[in-house]
Length: 174
Image 1 (cartoon, rainbow, N blue to C red):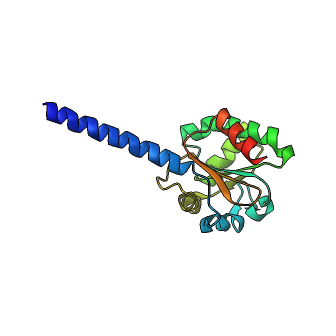
Image 2: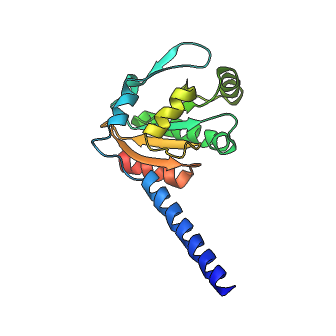
Image 3: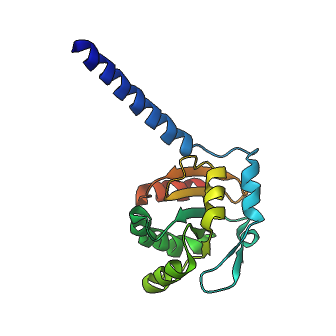
């Protein structure tokens, strides 16, 4: 019985350390050699309701790129926080873009009903693949990548954002 308890404790500790390691890796600064990041600036994705966004128009500004879905509770919860961040920081050059890993109809209805005023693009499977290329190896949502005005990734976060983290990123990149 004692041996089983020690093995279970060891496995639990190992799992906890692995979780911490993954969390630190996901929040690591991007490197100048991040080839996948270059693809972001060449990206064109449809807008809900018609038209398309060309990501090249946001190059040269700090960019918070958030992958989300209408069926993801933490994604829905953080949307007002992202909208507030966008309103408060856009005058200083910040851009916020949401890439929906979802269908057009529910995304369009969500954006209209909640008055989301920052750009939302329809990513679908292509958006999920992009999030994975940018470091979201788990494929979970929400997932956020912050790019500096030099167009290089500076931070990543899998899971919901909070005001403290957004403030930390904002100060670091302004």
